[in-house]
Image 1 (cartoon, rainbow, N blue to C red):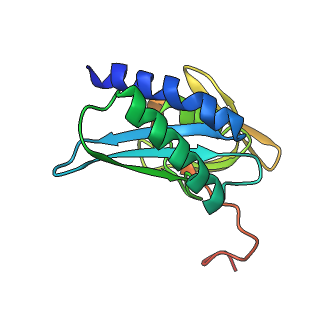
Image 2: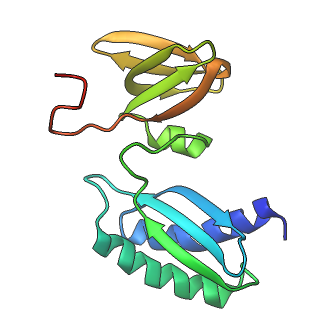
Length: 157
């Protein structure tokens, strides 16, 4: 089974469980490392994901994956939140990040930040304190969530 086919099959199996628990799939990461492979499932929900959420769905999707058999080798399953400053790589991650603060690094060294308001094939649209910024996707070298925390950040005092 090809990687894309395996990932699609895994998603097909786990999405109904995640939906039943009010969770969104942010990313799926398969690492076929030896001696045991690792399947990482990153989930989120409005208000954030807790340890109990991860624990509960980990048991359910682990059992389903074991019975359904899309992974033909021994593996460890890890279910977690995406993290406060997650790097955004895949289209699904960009779409999940709409409404969240992001930071983008562009070719040439420029750095932009703002609330992600729109994701299109050719560009991202950010809102930085009311200023609309359109960022051509071809110029983005890296993008990640810009963690919103209730305390002052280092260097911003």
